[in-house]
Image (cartoon, rainbow, N blue to C red; front, side, top):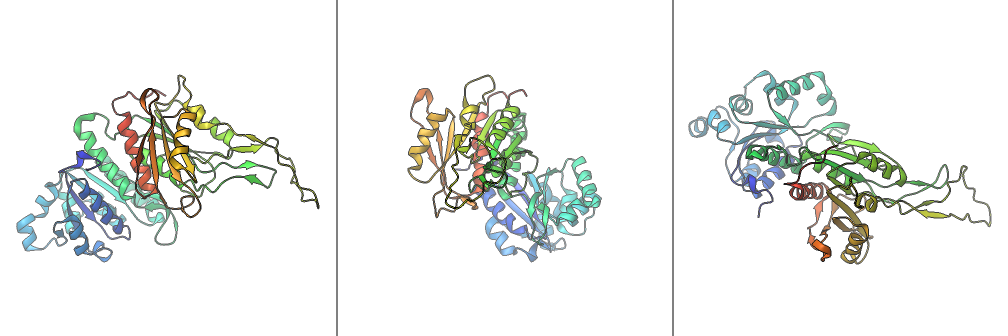
Length: 422
C-alpha cells in the first residue's frame, strides 16, 4: 500500500539536468512510481551523460523525452502539451545553468522550453558546486524564481562530488518526495500546506561529553547521523524545528535552528528553554553518568596509583520532557539503543520514562549502527489506558529514510490537533 495515498494518480513531469546528482533522480522516480504517480521525464543532453535514457524509461515505465526538434515527439506530445499535462513539474537536479535559463526565460532545448511553456507549479532541487551556489548570479536567479512562485527544496550542505565541502548537494529523494507530498496536501484544502506547517518540533542528537579533567572526558560512539536525519525530515514537512546537538561532524540540516551543547546538563537546559513544542524526539545518546566533581587540573598517572573516578547520574532528559505538566509536548518520542533483548528492554523503558513512543534499535558490536549509514528500528507505541505497547518492525533503511518515515508518522499522529502556541 502507498505511504502517501494523496500521490496516487498524480502526474509528475521530472526534468533531469546534467550533474552527478542525476543518479538520485532514479531513486526519486522509483519512489514516485511506488506511490502510484505517473512520471514522465525530460532528460537534458547533460543529464544523459550521467544516466541513460533506457534506465530512466525502465523506471518511469514511459518514454523519455530529449529532443526539442523531434518531429514525431512534437506531433505526438509537443512541448506545450508535455509541460501542461502534468500536475507538478519537478526539476532534479536543477543545475546553475538551468536555473539561469528559467530566470531569464531562455528556451534553447526541450527542458528550458517546456519550463517556459508550463502553466503548472514548479519545484526545483538545486545541485552544484558550493561556490557556484553562493555566487551572486545564482542567488539572484533563485530569488527571481522564488518571486515567481517556484518552490525549492535544498540544496543541502556536505561533501560534494568535486571533493569540496559546502552547500550544493541535491536534497535526498525522500526529502523531495516529502516536498511533493506537501504540495498536494496544500492543494487538498488542508489549509496547512506542508503537513507539519505551524508545528514546533524539538530533536536531540549526537553524544554528550562529560569532562573528567581539562583534557579527558566520558562520551560514546554516537555520530548524530540519525538525530540530524530526523530533524531534517521534520523540517522538510514544514515543522519549525529546533535541534539540540552534542559534538558531531554532521552538517546542520537546512532550515533547522541548531543549538550546540556538550554536557547533559546543557542539553536539558536547552530543551527546557525551547518549550513549548508539539513533538519532542530524544534521539541523542546522553551519557548516563558524569563526574561528581570535575578536576581543575590534569589527573597525573602516578606510579602504583590509580585515580578514583567518583560518578553521579546525569539528568534524565527524556523522562523530564515526558513528565505531565503544562508544557509537556503532545508527543514525546524516545530512543532505546540496546545490545540484547531489544524489544523487552524498550518496552520497559517506554513505561519507565513515561513517553509516548520508543524507537528501539540494536547497536551491538557488528551491527554498524553507531557511526553507520543504515539502521533497523522497531517503533513501540504506548497502549491506551495502560495496555500493552504496539510494536512496528521497520526494515533495514538508511538513516535518512528512517528520519523521513518517522517524520511522516509524527505528522499523521498530530493531524487533527491544534498546534501549540509558543
